[in-house]
Length: 383
Image (cartoon, rainbow, N blue to C red; front, side, top):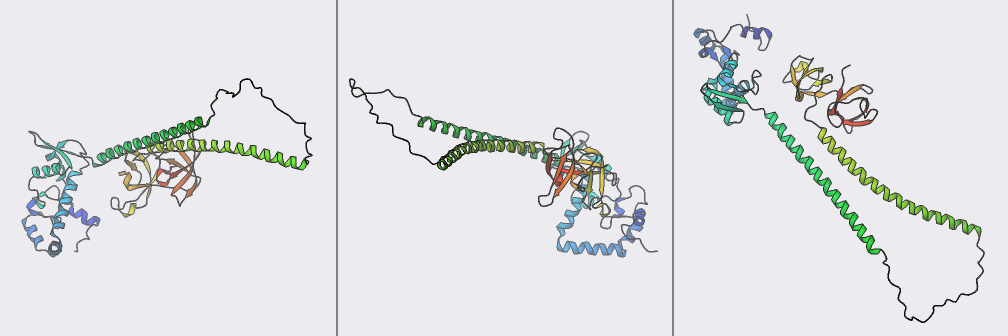
């Protein structure tokens, strides 16, 4: 009877037939095969399948022997450190190791560069993957959440950017105030100052000689109407100047309002966007397999800000493996990030050139307002 292909359900079941751990000396790390006794292990070493695997590894070692060792070390570290049972809690290292070796197909420590658990724990501490401390009971480890450290750095950067924006706004207002003071000082210089009347001759009287009144020439009525039009046009020009001054003031006010809105948008933007009741799409195949690629599901509930349970496979999924879903026009959507986060709206149109959506807000003080949001800031609501 032939052997089943690797990866088939029957082959996996056959591998799991033996219960519990057996002797480490009868385990072949290269083939990931556990033999029951010494005779079985000897037969395995002389088997054709084992010889093929050995030849394959010899060929890889010939080209790059560091690559094989690095791959085995990375597997051991990944499976040991990323145990979902403990997370970032402080726990005894031996307890984690006992939990790890319960898996029959785990990578054995003898195949790595560490021969004792103490050496491996010290490596985890020196590489910054875990916080370690030694007590009378033994070594304790606590996983360092790299994402949390990254979020703290991003928050510090956002605070610095907001501070820089406020400083630039204050400098702009200061320059405008200085410009206004300069204009006022120039106007004061051009004002005429009143002086005392001085006469050269005190006793002499001032006389005026006026001639007879001259008759006014006859003026054509057409010319008078033209002059009136020109006069009115001149007055309109004065009004135009006043209008331009008002427009300049209005533009400056609009610029300040736009700066305030941009500042508010940056404050409202978060690095997480998952919400209950929205429809999302799976975009990664390595974690869930090809059968779940591009599959849509509804977010049932949130495990934390960055992880949610969806009705695709019932497991917790991080937001880095998901993307928002854009429906057809006229459907309801939820804004999940940005200035209008938490508002529901109706999709009006899709701008493919700018990768944005036009939404009409359905609730809150902004009800009825038409807003533009990026693709990733809104997702379809489950009906």
